[in-house]
Image 1 (tube, rainbow, N blue to C red):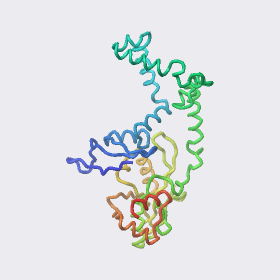
Image 2 (image 1 turned 45 degrees about the vertical axis):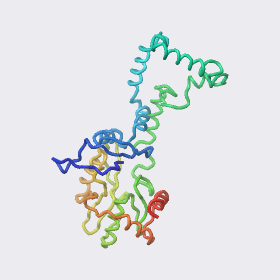
Image 3 (image 1 turned 90 degrees about the vertical axis):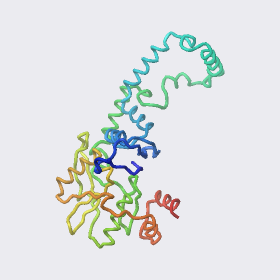
Image 4 (image 1 turned 90 degrees about the horizontal axis):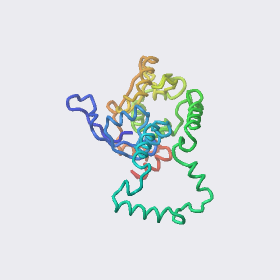
Length: 301
């Protein structure tokens, strides 16, 4: 998730400056890292998530995307090291230092595994690391395929169902018994209720939109609201997320199914101030799910 306010190009005010440096929160480990906007967008399109370097490498290893790189690195190491001693590779002083380290740390009792009952077996079958290294590529490929088949499309127990309450990374909770998944959605919800606009949540099977993701897999998309007076289907989405590959597929399918499909961003919503949110919270009309209730109290109370 991008947490930096994005800047627009000077010559084309409607376009973002892809060369700007931004701060991004990793969707897996939640760590914040720095990136260039263009690189972040490429990563998001490829993996459907914002990933820091460590999480991206782990994903690449788990999907076998680094096999060629490992082979090339291994061949380079063999070419450099095979049949040579420290004295052949390094200068005399460095070679002597490395030999002393080796003798101290790894010979006989200096080896932490010296006398260990399972040291040989552990070396042959590591208990951690990429599954290709742990089980061999053939077995690892079968494991990945079985896992994918179990969770893919209609085999997934959540297929065709709206996201459960409390899921997602946004500030979620309830405003006057209506559930919201982000502060942007909360702002729009307050606008609807304060202006007595009749609506209902569209996150149910009645408004489900079927679409194909970029892999050609069947998926279901559930918009946010249905407005009775205008018969509009409304999606609340931050502007920087509209252009993702998956969202484009969702929204195109929704436009085909609903002639009054509408996307509302932070440009069309007056976002609630911190003071207003705190006021609603103190009145009892606003409640957050547990983890964000703790976060809110720590930050604003």
